[in-house]
Amino acid sequence: MFRHRDHVNHILLLSVNDIKEWEKKNGKIPENSFVALRTYWSKRWPSQGKFENLDDKKQAHYPGWDLDALKFIYEQRGASANGHETFDTDTAVKQEHGLMGEYYVLSHNHYQVELLANLDLVPATGSYIFISVPKAKKAPGFPVRAFAVLPD
Image (tube, rainbow, N blue to C red; front, side, top):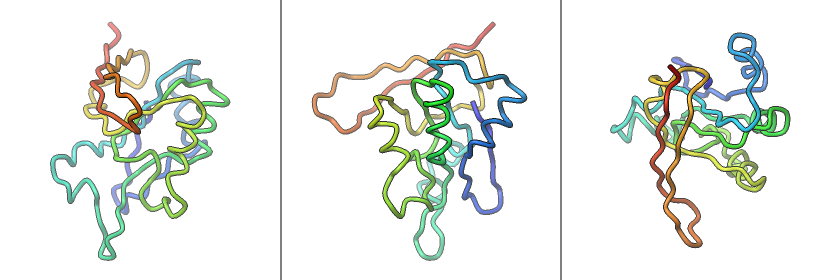
């Protein structure tokens, strides 16, 4: 579970270097892990305005994953899924070519969970995540109930 904050402009983009720095403190990401990006962004809810964080040109500003970081956790670390507290995998200001990170995850037989909350209550490593998913035929996305079981 990565913890990142950018209090100045909220254009955080999690990089491969950020992941490697995190691994120096917490150990290598184990294969088949669910990797969550903790940004504390969920604390802005239920204010839609604070959550979208629009500038004067109506451009949203919220954190997300760099495409290379996603490729790293899946191709180099063997993660099975990722999650984050925001609407999208990609940071809001990097969506000029669409949701490239989200497309990468979903087109490579992985899944992601968006709009996670209470990640601040989960330790950086060692927890188990359970995700209950309704069977939604031909749905592009659907709500889930996700909860973590913490280590002793």
